[in-house]
Image (cartoon, helix red, strand yellow):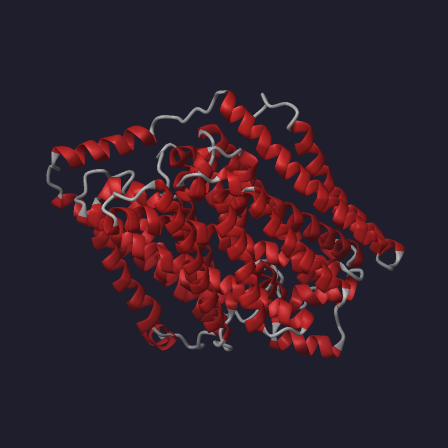
Length: 580
């Protein structure tokens, strides 16, 4: 067994330990699904950031960076814009909803029928995305360890299940913070190596093969511009709606929710250059014919090529640990959220008629988490069978065709209050029709004939255009339907009006956390995570003992020192419980 496999196995054991250590934190469904709304901002910010980050960043996105240069950074800057709007306004508002699952807020706004539409409509997007991320991880593992992709998908999914079922949202969020530190330290170390081996960023850009700013396979710049505009529109919608409010429901108060959004925004701004400097370096300076041939047929392995060619022995294993971290952090958040939605918005109110005890709901929650996990594994295996599809395109199309239509009523519904309850589920139906027309029925040939294009659309142009057209159609038709429902509004019953009044009263009332009990819990969070991260830091430092050149040993020392410093700072902060 080589050192890289040992590193990954140790990391798996570490994640399972996190679930075990946080098992006592969950005594109710509120604790299990949102940490009881008692978590500190740096934990919440880490999980908010990590939900937009997965192994796909190192596969599909890195492949896009390798072939098209700077273009991929735009997607992550759009994420940063979404988080900025969270910080500026939405994050505290989401925390102030005072619900356990985001669908509970939708029930208050649009009623019981819409609650069920959104319950069953919101889960496919995140479950399919989790399956895509799991598949992206398997691509890397298969290339590194020559382990079958199906085996990787199954084993990784099972480790994730053990951690999530054992510790609930506390384990999920805690592991996200640890994994964020591991990923950032590993990728910063790789970026520094790429920077110095490539003679600086400008030299890498100057030697990039192709158009660094616009990329390849592009005849119509206007299509690229349209794609940019609607990617920003899409990510604004994705980040700033009550369905995705789950990111901030676990924050201990409004101010911690705002700080969490700020942390995620900063990480998403500085992250892309750090993450994509290695694949840019590979494009510019890796000239070995065999490797170039491999990359031409599978650009998704560009990051792996960099680590194998440039980084010291053992770093592949550490990168794989970071890859597992990225994938699991995205999957476990969706897994925990979906299980929460099923239990709180279907099992409890529909099957058990709100008669179930808290003990029964906790048992059902763990069983639901197990089932959701097995479904994600099955989807990952299915996607693995679709060999001819690009991971980058799959992710964007799933978001545009499934995810975005759901965001329109929950975003607009918090601003336009006087719409009938059916405007919620009715907009979903219209959105499904629009998705079918623009995402499935419409083809490149239709566009070429309609506009009389002399040059046929390339594969990249059609994929970009389809995403842009789908999003534009949803803004115009799906959004237009919701706005038109305003003219059919009729006064509500007293009971429904009281429910909506309560929703908007909460929306505008800050949550303030105080008291000795919360301070003690803050200290416990810092102490447990500080000790875990310190252990991880020493573990990475120990990898400097692996036989390598002095420069290689120095990279492990640099990486381990970053993690260790964070752990020591948290341990010191745990001795000052009054500090938030």
